[in-house]
Length: 243
Image (cartoon, rainbow, N blue to C red; front, side, top):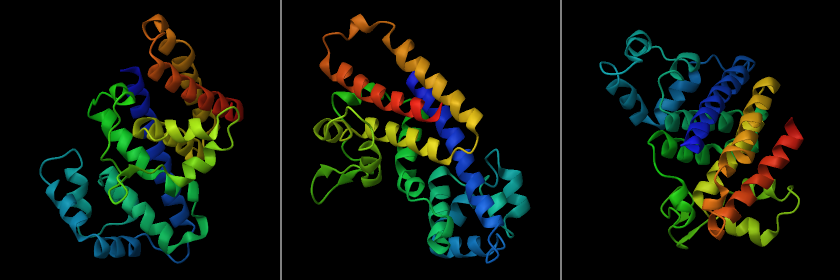
C-alpha cells in the first residue's frame, strides 16, 4: 500500500514536470506557435482526437473540451489527454524539434506509464517479485524474453557495489525495472530542488523505516530481501547525489 501510494505521488509530480518541460521548450521555440504541433499530432494519431471527443459529456474535463475542441493548442490539450496520449505528444514534439531533447527522459517515459497505471488500479506489485509480469512493454515477443531499457541499464552502471549479473537479473523484473526507471526519470525532469529533496526524504523513510518495520516476516525470503537490498542501494545512491 505504501509503495503504491508513493509511486502514484511520484508519478503525478513527474507528469507535471514533463508538461512544464514541454510547454517551456515550445514557448521558447520560434518555429512553433503551439497549434501547429497539435495539427500534426492529430494527423499522426487521428484516434486521439476521437478519444478526446468521447470525454465531452462525461468527464471532469468536459467543459475544457467544449471550449477548445476546434482550437487546440499544447497548453490546453495537455489538460485533457490521457497519460499515454500525452507521451505520444511529448515524443512527437522532440522528434520534430530535438534541440532540447533529453535521451534519458524520452527513454524512460513508458516504464513510468506502466507502473503508474498498475499502482493507480491498485494492482498487487509485490507478488510479481516471485512471478513477474511477462507481457509488458518490455516483452520481446520474437525472442520471448524481457528486454530492459538500454538507457536504464546505462544509468545503473554508474552505481557502485552492484554487479553486472545482479543488475541484469533484478531489472528483468518489470516492476523493479519500472520503479527504478521512474526514480531516475523524476530526478532528471524535476526542476525544483526543494521538491526533489522532499520526495527523496520520503523514499528514504519508506526504505529505511517503514519497509523494515517487520523485517522478521521476510528474513528467510531471499526473493524479497535481495530485491529490497538492490533497490536500497539505488535509493542510497540517488539520495547521496541529490540531497
